[in-house]
Length: 376
Ligand SMILES: *Cc1c(COP(=O)(O)O)cnc(C)c1O
Image (cartoon, rainbow, N blue to C red):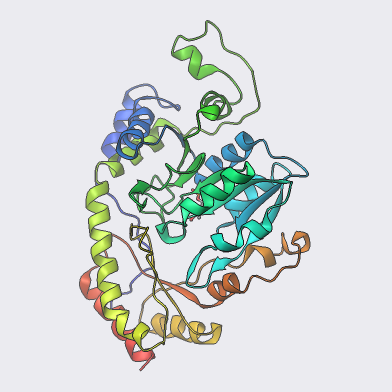
């Protein structure tokens, strides 16, 4: 019986060709033709104001934290059910994290509970679009506007997804995407910062280029360049950008295929949700589905462990996801002690099923048969 892995990186086939092209061009450091091509692709397709490729989404979040100018004494609201980097980027600047709980029926942060978390020290809200499904951005942006807060979208999983017709990544003041090999489009390790707020356009480029105004110099806007601000080496080499370009050319094909697979899962498992055995992903009316992930939520951690075990016996690798950040070894001693029950439930009960371009319809049939049989 063929084993079914949890993830398999998608390859369009043209990655080596474009990487060789980058190497042969004689310009293999960052901010060359492939980098610019990728950035323009996102700016034109999604209306992002300015895009800067980075070596990871974590890097893009670190840039966002620097641009937010947060420091000791400042508070940043982050969902507890997310990847470490959504919080860590701000912690490195000295900020305190105030963790938000998830919605009852959706792992995204519960916007209706946010206002109670805002204090005079709050500076930023990080909106993580879990599984590529939009947070409820209109009330979130309105709340941020009323309190003078910045909104950073952690859109790591949210390529090609929308909120009320607007692309995710175009709504917050800043946004971060990931091209890690587990995402829909990949570069091995890679990411991108999106700058939507005019105030950050110039400084973002300087922080990206090690605190120098090098990019302005190469555009001929200044006649010498030097050290003008803080920053780091956040830009990827042209080899990474060339790989990414080979993926972006195929974005529509990737998305169409993933959505077919997702819909097949949903159709086959819907009867289990109707019987109340599991909860399936909820795509609110304001969101589109980018099929980043297919998950189900069991009734207890015990049931989840047993289900993952049963799938494993059948040669199928399914995995749980985040452990609540508010009870992590690093942050628990710093957390304010509030319990976050919805977040804990997703941490205990959510299972992610195999999802990748090469997954076959018969693989999904086989996976769903095991699950239906388990709950029988
Ligand atoms: C994958 C992911 C990240 C980190 O992305 P890297 O590119 O690996 O740094 C951050 N946040 C979320 C929500 C993610 O899913």
